[in-house]
Length: 158
Image (cartoon, rainbow, N blue to C red; front, side, top):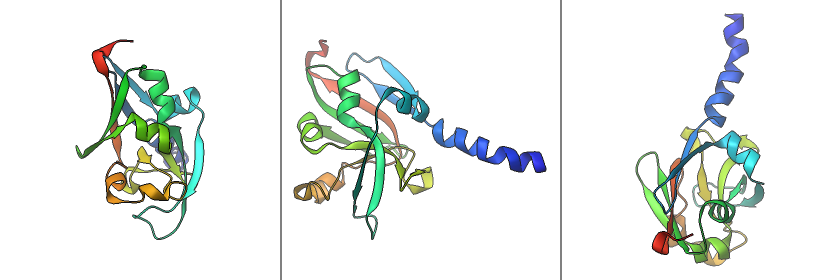
């Protein structure tokens, strides 16, 4: 029993940080990644904002969507779709990604986001920095429990 208690944090961290994320590219190829890999490959950004689902301001840390598009998209990328575990999905234009700097949040208030709390990946806009997008159009794009990202490009040309 003592060993099981000792192993619980290790097993929990593997579940949280090993959560798979599928990134589908415009040429239909697929990249599978996870939180550990994302943290090794990308710098994170942190901001504080109040979202309509919380009564107070929260700190979000994650990977800038623009950096994911920069790495896996091309000059013809025009939109990105975020799909959730429950099959909800929303598409964000490249203009909104470039203008409003959303992130794929992996932690809230320095804690990994668990599935029961909208994790492990949540596309978040900084509504305090960009109050003009604090409306239902942009709220509906903040997909949580993301398990797939699809990057769309015109003509599939590199």
